[in-house]
Length: 426
Image (cartoon, rainbow, N blue to C red):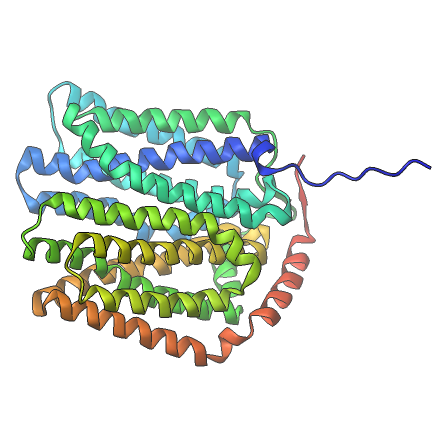
């Protein structure tokens, strides 16, 4: 008798479509980071005005508050691959206009602010579409590993993109924008080569944008565990956003070179990459609740220790630790959200989640400025550590966070029911 051979899913390293999606997004994210750090630098170089620099930086951040909710609706409404292709093409054109202007010896702060706003908006659309597409190009059992690699990719883009943008701009003012435009075109090329569809085919009449937006918000509001976890994420993001500001002030107070900041921040980035790569390992062994509560207590301990640290090496180790926890948590949270959210709602749920997180980041910057202008850095680190510890304690006693298993089962059932009216396009 001949045994029937069974084959498992294609490994991610040999999954052609996933590799194309992953590598294209890696280039795209790197280009976005290179351009992002270049906007304020080039404005300050040409105008010598912190006010104009702040205005352009604000234009780049504004879409994080205005665009994410409608972007989520569009990601669920339109073909995700075509939407990503349009985003990359439009981004290349917009950045190309900056290259032409600067290469011709001209400068326009209004143009830079407009392009910065447009590029961030397009990047949001691209990111949400790519997040929703992942589960359609990999096997369900590989989702955690795929999202772990995606998180590591994003952190590597941050680690390389910021110094890369500074180096390119030191060579030529237009160089970082040319690099970012070419990165967009390279990403567009990778999308053209992908064969699988990025979403299931939707049936029935198309609803209005407002109706679909409300539909996504209502679905998220019904998810007790997810909405509660998001509240704790927002609180921790608000507090963690103060850390780099406090670091800048501390390094200056200690009279150290600015290179010390770069080394410490790089250590945090490396810790984040390692955490992201190990996120799949943790996700298979402990629950999201355990990751959340344990991460909060870990952050609290590390941040409190920063109040006593003065040497760059010690601060680098502590920042690497906070980055590691963040990387692990982001993977676990992404896996939970993607697995439990219906395919037809991926964009809206991810957009709402990112809005909550980035909104907290903006508030954190404002709170950090007030705190650092009123207290010393040591006290600020202690206050942040104490506040994060309070969040961790609250998380351990919050009933909604004890229901992760029940919530997962309930949402998995709802996901199947919601997706029943959709079919995978071929």
